[in-house]
Image (cartoon, one colour):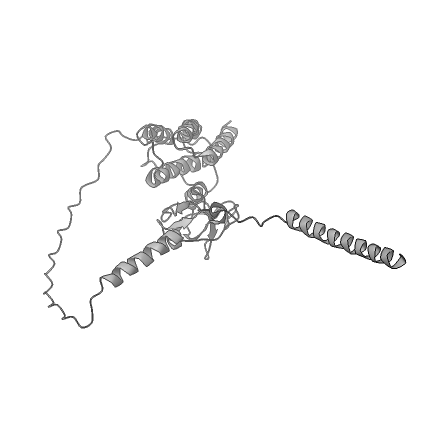
Length: 297
């Protein structure tokens, strides 16, 4: 009887241990979650938008840096001539028209030429932190097009054992006639020659009497926007150039600069309504108007 009881207890203990082991294994298997596989949309890299480097050569630095800022670029001045407002851009890297990926604020390097007196503080580096410059032509789609072109070229390649075609003599190129130079049109309206400055800035450039006055330039820009509703590269560059000219001239005390800035703010409102850009330029014009009104009073 004692032997039977001992065997029964041993079998009971073995059965309990086996049941506990199976229960633990089942719980571990049920608790383990399958690893989540990333979706193709999440694994694919985000595509950056493409920016086009604007033309900056032969522009005053004060206009060039405004163009870069509104186009989404940063800048750095290299060379012996520093970033004073009146100096002129002589070269840029990369060249105008280069397509780059929008990495935040791609860097454009400028070389300047001294133009008149250098007043104020030089600005050799933009206030925006520069980011890497990545050409858009090296994107995955461009590489795929290159490989496809190579496959097509290999398919239509001529066998080396094939007979060489006879070369035809090249036709002589006829020189193209030079286009006739048309004389420049002279505006019918005589520009006002009496333009007393609103205030005097030591060392500032005098208002050129061969250019239209600032109020007329601002009114012409406002009228021009009615016929240009699309923000093409040429349209944006034209607006930024006229905007920079009016702001710089008003700050140098040119004739009726405050009136021109008020009209320019109306043009900036129209640019925002038509193109959805220009908030930073409008803030610059608003600050310039406050400075001009304070110095004129």
